Length: 339
Image (cartoon, rainbow, N blue to C red; front, side, top):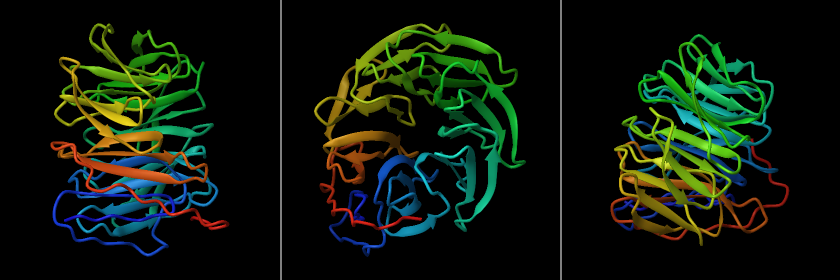
């Protein structure tokens, strides 16, 4: 089945199947930059969050029908980070406020607010078992939280530079984070002690994550490189030319996806470094990349080069590399408010 959501903010969603089409009414759209996207654990739903003068909403979409399931309201500014819990029950978000909001996916209601950061929250990630949450902030810290209890467990980092990204290792024992000082850090999640400091990037690192099998670590920087590291030794083992400081691992740890030059999204074999596929993306700035948990889809989100806060999400079939249909973007409506 083929569906799309036409949006002033440019939200497009496509999956392989028949040529039937569902178009949403004008009210169902993002009218701002799509900073964060996250698939549900069963790969059936996709959450997207945006920011801009007219749209600061989180929306949850049903991929099979193309319909908006729910919207999460409360933000008055940009939403930078989205994560869905491993059981699919909760959605965690962060952005231009000094807190993390935890929402019920089923009701769309905010159930908890985790306060403690002193500046914007740039990144959020659940542990594999869903018991902990880790966040990175412009307050120069990475923090571990117990989302169920609503309390902070531990603070990581030396507080020298704004932290851009943070994520748990698959076993939850290590946290990886990166900052504006071109550095990737590994901390012991239990003690908070620094395990490794990975140096090599020539500009701020904005994303870092372990491969799902924990054998490799990848980081992306505004020096336009994506680098692979051995998490045990801390040594760099490969380097790729990118375009934007975002990337994503495939669930089987075999592929790394990231923006290349000329609006391409590259799918690279993480073992031999060969480019498996080049996907032609939109003319714009890619802010997020995500594989679906079943490994069948790849999604990107960001902002088109229109100068009018036109966001986008594109989704491809990973196996065929086929974008079902080019995204369509309506012009923004002056004065329209989101929230």
